[in-house]
Length: 402
Ligand code: GCO
Ligand code: MG
Image (tube, rainbow, N blue to C red; front, side, top):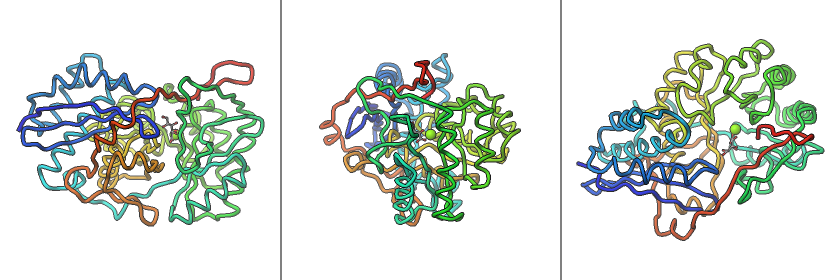
């Protein structure tokens, strides 16, 4: 069997998605997510212009060899564009392997390690009472874990808060919108938010929070120590993670569990964080971290160092990524939790999939392969629309991390 076609599909059913579809000489097809939010067309071009031509005629069964060929063979290693493109190929090839074997991919990864994949939802609101109502909505839906994000008085917009509660979408403009940030104001609100959530929902619910790269290590250590009494399940991306040594400082000041890695694209981005046990959860995911093959390698390194998984699962990761993530989540020994931001109906229609939510768990599809497809006719009805994530400035106008 040979690869006879590799096609890049760009579609925007409410938001942009890039998908790679590989077809073999036996007519088996596989798909992989290639979406890089705000930089979608760069991956589409990388695939179309530099990867698809190399795939034609290759044996689709040789997943590891193809991964190495695209990684080593590019000479220029790593980076989000390259690794997202490699991920798309890798994911599509696993899909094909599963279909050829007649097995869901998780069976090829060693089989089930648990009954279901515990997921968390993203409860948000302008005010603390609004957030509490959203948490209640998730609890009613059966969620066992909820991430809480609240507006900051005096700031007109902040990460994680939106009008479209269930379908949070940060890429909101055709040129980056500008938000204002104040660490002082933020640090006053978060402990109040945690106190209110614990007060209303008690301690059985797992509570998470995303700091979204906004603090310095010492600020994060201080916030973590103030939140310890509310037993956070994790604090996410407390600081930008280029400086991995900075996490030692956070560790010296708090036992609040730390989750990092949604912007990581290779094992080398988290090798020190994992080896020195500076984090508790690794948030890398299939689409941005080199596919199932490479993410499994990251998860295995993490398992040796008491680090659990907590993969990114925002709306900008398509159902093709979510499907693949769930096969890994159900199989690996050190699974922690999976983010699950629901997609809109339009997105779900373009990507018919077999995973389902029940009782706070997501369950991977039992169909052979990954159990996800793309409806190309429908996809063609939604042309690409430029959309960017916002940028952030301090109150004096200096650029800050968004
Ligand atoms: C999350 C993330 C997202 C990102 C988005 C960027 O934890 O869900 O932080 O909301 O901002 O995926 O494209
Ligand atoms: Mg995040």
